[in-house]
Length: 489
Image 1 (cartoon, helix red, strand yellow):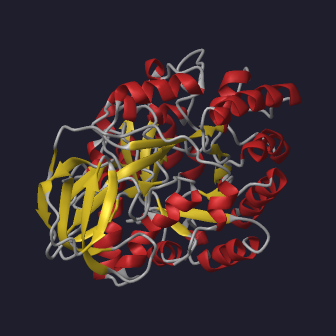
Image 2 (cartoon, one colour):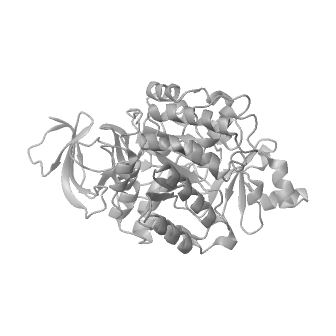
Image 3 (cartoon, one colour):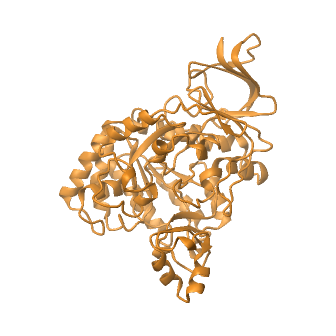
């Protein structure tokens, strides 16, 4: 007898090929059988008629580092069909971290000082195992986090001795299963790090066959130069590189995704490259003075000195105060913001590219979060695939499952295959859609019928079941091998 039988369901297997109809049986946390299964019995039987079954979605770009421990129900992700999150992006991670004061910007996106209690990577993995979050967790190590540990201040380049100390700490994390290194070179806390600093640090990745991911030094006018820097670092380290949330930001940069993708394709002839993207034309982070402009709307989501100004546009706040946009931004800091800084055509061009994986980049600690936190994956399925027709449903699923699992070395996940871990999402292709909006972002998606994590039914009919079956996922083997096997549908 099986644990679960999902009968007569449309299967989108994550590889990007044609869908087919079958029944799927689960046992002991794995996919035990796929086929007609006319005589199968199970403790739980679910009718899949008119529904689609896909691998659980893999959110390759998150900032859930402390939330998987502090709020292990992980409802913003579980409710949209996400079964695995990759934390530690953009150069910021919860570990290994030793703070001397409050977390520097943008590490403050991950929590407050008391939330950073993992001086070693092994401490962090043990905390995840103890918390037993509702989703699986894989982790990158943040460059800015390492800089914080070994430098007296972050507005300068590191010395060779400091980088070597960082590299030793990175090597220890890689030995304990970290997927790789991330950087956030656009942020003031890492902007002064030169290319040589990152190259020296990234040398540790080669030994372990790990990954380099980067929030580029610029997503504005200098984006091509920033991409070349990323490619040079990864080529030096002899490892794959993933460009985080690839975009052309700023009104003067709109339309340049053709150039950007051409450069990405060119690099792919020499090395393993990829990118992730969220399905919205607005970004979100801390309030960055370098991004303050009147070319597009900027929404303030929180402000420590002026909490009463949250949920307002920066232009309206500046007008009320009778000051310039920059003066208002300075007065609001530290603060958070949503920047409506992209063109929809560019978003669609990047999202539809064969190299692109889907990541939410959601900020779970923002009191007025960007709607991507709750809606990114159903938006790809419902809005971009079904309603806009940007790509077929099977290809949409591939971008969120099989492609991501291969590139991040998540063995036995990302596909509907016998013997694979039973991370699965059952959804209604006709009704699945994001309901989170900029005005009302904390809303679960429609059309997500059920979610299994490691074979355990964790979400059903709009409600978490209370079962938490997520696991810590260490890096599996040399990612160069799995990366090269990733099919680009």
